[in-house]
Length: 146
Image 1 (tube, rainbow, N blue to C red):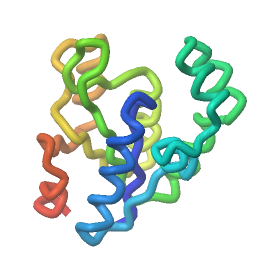
Image 2 (tube, rainbow, N blue to C red):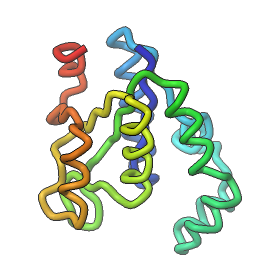
Image 3 (cartoon, rainbow, N blue to C red):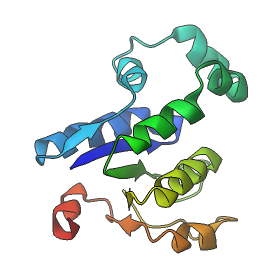
Image 4 (tube, rainbow, N blue to C red):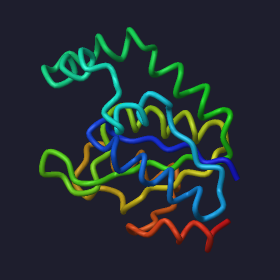
């Protein structure tokens, strides 16, 4: 099973670790190659600086991340969204992840969340409607449902 790993850019190191764990479990885990470079400290430092200064939209547009991730979603059997705590919100799911989750859903891809659905989100109902499988912090739980 080919599983593409996504999540907030704040979780890039954890996303890379999740990809490695999926491979260790015998899945074909993969992630955007640039994220692995960033996790190794080899990423585009100017781009990272711009993101840190709130220039996310420009970086997303310049790298065409929405379309690139969509193509990767189509090439996968399932998507694992790493959703950790961010901005004081447990199990954070931001706008981009919601878009990507919708793309996976309408293309009949299995949707995994590394943790539970966030309790306090403006789009909890939309997330629940896509029937994600919550792994409760343990990626080995994927083996129980595939």
